[in-house]
Image (cartoon, rainbow, N blue to C red; front, side, top):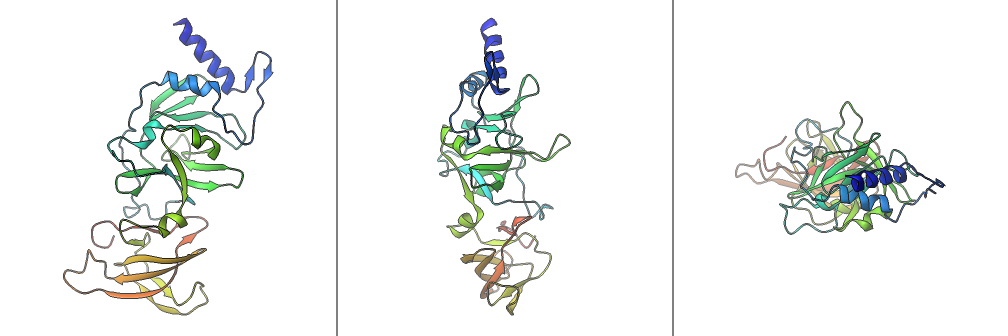
Amino acid sequence: MKRWMAMVFTLLMLTAGCSATGPVPRSDVPGDIPASEAELRALVPEPRNPLPTGTVFFWAGQEDADLGVGYLGPAQVPANRKIHWASALLLPLFAQPGDVPWGWLVNGWLVTKSPTLHKEPFTTRGMVEVAEGVQAFVVLEKRDDGWFRLRYAEPDRHGDGTAWSHVGRLEHSPAPVEIELWREHFSGDLPSPLFYRRSDVRHALRRGPSVDTAAAGWIGASHDIFPLEVQGDWMKIRVTQPSIWCRQGKRGKTAQGWIQWRSADKGPWLWYRPEGCAP
């Protein structure tokens, strides 16, 4: 008991940025894991899968959710998807870049210091599915100095569920993790066609990557989008209407053109096509 109390006291002193001889220097680019975080992992020794409370599905009333600039997830699709990649994650959470951490995502737990250490099971609510059975954190901002802001939880009465961290900490995670921007993600091999998150309104299919170009057609509620090229906020696509899931034996019509695929305040307007008819 005495050893455990001494360990907690040391952890609190270090994470508060102070010691018996004065303040601990802070770095704007936190790269190394301090001894306090090694002790933190010792306090939560058993990795566990985050509680499966669901992910955000944007065709179920979440069409306007902010998807930011990309996501934080596993560098490779896990071979065993029954073991959640976040169960081996060690990531400090900061209120602002350059601060000392106020909490950690560690071994599938959310550990906070308020003012004493408190741990609770981490849940997947607020995460998004970026591949079949693979959930990830939305990255809302990513700065050139390595700091990024992520959504680690669904917003509630306690806060907006966001925090800052640094890419220098990712290399210390036992399982390889990375930040992938949506432009890179949607330009790669996708498991299914894309569709507009706001499919209840018509979207113009334009002849060029600008709102000033003429419309080559319109995209209705039932459609499948296949990316061909990305230029900034614009994407050249091949679109088939109606969706393969809704044709009922009829042949779809295909066209090519340009769409505005993202915005500064909501991130990508596109998402994966669910296996069903138009949302």
